[in-house]
Image (cartoon, rainbow, N blue to C red; front, side, top):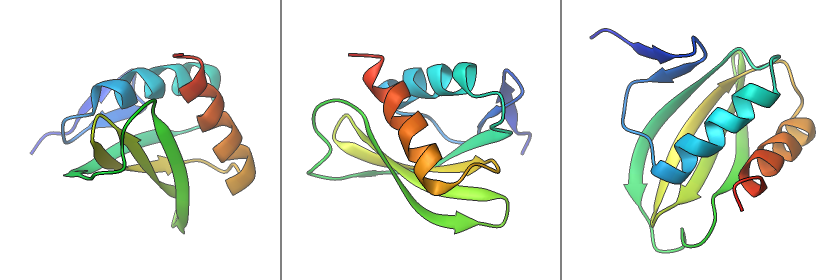
Length: 100
């Protein structure tokens, strides 16, 4: 399966939740030190209402795994970066609130 790319840094293997897609575009535009973002599996959850929320969960080999909540679903995000957890969370929060 060929991996589609958007702007060379947002890799699209699965579909992306609408609110999350817009937030990721803003996030990548404002943060050139982020090498790539790979959205993962989407699952329906009850507590994903309101504006987009992103939690950074665990470190990976080349960055962080995060969970985005929006549109009644959650989506995994694999973020390749050298940023620390706190800095990454702040930048994701900023990108999510810019949509409001």
